[in-house]
Length: 190
Image (cartoon, rainbow, N blue to C red; front, side):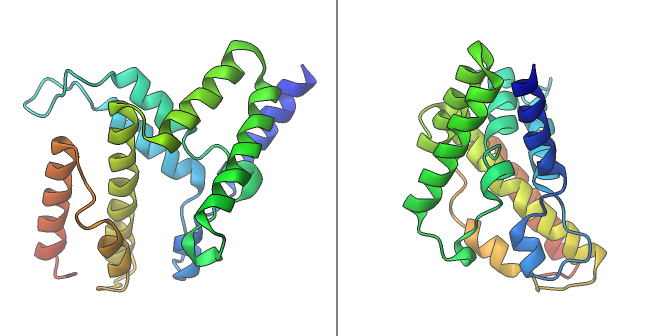
């Protein structure tokens, strides 16, 4: 039982781990990593809605799980971004080690599944992982738009939009991005 409590305590640290990109841009009240993961999971929950945007090829429950796990290692290594100056390979190794530790603490089938979901996302090895990657990027620019609007920061977070331009692949997410850009243009923020 002590391993489970240690696991839950580590995961709980994500609630207090502020997203580095927002901290570096002096956002007044930056979201935490768990805030980001939670909204990503809710976005994935919307899959299969009874509308024209549903995608029967994707497993909604699996997407939710991938979204919940994709940044889990950050409870140990922190939110490492390119601005941190850590090479991509080193970041991956640190996160892999953290996920091995977390998986061992969770133990059994749950621990194996946590690691496999994280690895799936890292390798972008399934349609669900690819969709969640698009959701990750979309959630970031949605958050950027919200900060621009709430803090009257016209164009100050453009670099987040630029970093995702042309990278979206899934038609559903592309549609959301298009709508977000329409909102952003209509509000005078671009």
